[in-house]
Amino acid sequence: MLTDLFGRSLLFFDVDGQTFAIRQPTPEEYDDAEHMRELAYKKALTRPEIQELRNQPCSDEERAAFESVIAQSEARFRELADDHPAKQQLAEEIAQLRQTLERRTLAEELAWNRGILARDRYLTGRLLCHADGTPYFNQRDEKVFQEQWRALPIKIKDAARVKIWQALALVREAPFSSVP
Image (cartoon, rainbow, N blue to C red; front, side, top):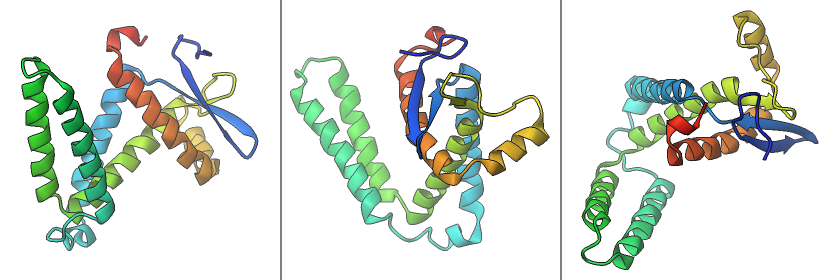
């Protein structure tokens, strides 16, 4: 597996015949991105067009996604022995998911999506690399960074999101002490 200059794994993707990579975030980048997600979520909830939807149930797609996670969790629950230490925690998580689904509104769903997009865009600006692992953006000069960001086609930004999700999953599964 190829790595960046600090030994972090690179996740490659192609857009229009050009190869890019996403590196794993540092603990600080991860924390900053989650903070960015939370701020964008809270800001979106205050927007009038979002507030108008606060009494609407979440979309069918959102409901199906929640129900899929609940079904997978219930299947794991049934597979565990009655005395397994994780069984009680999993039961509590399933109950929490059900409760969240019942209260979930379209406003929360849309605000959450805006928060995720803000997080992903933030991370794209920091984690996107050329195929050789060198950073795509100049982080030292804000004006140059903004010019590079504006010049980057949206389809590359969108393609990077899938790899960002994979990088975040890797970080969540591994302790931060293993990430330089």
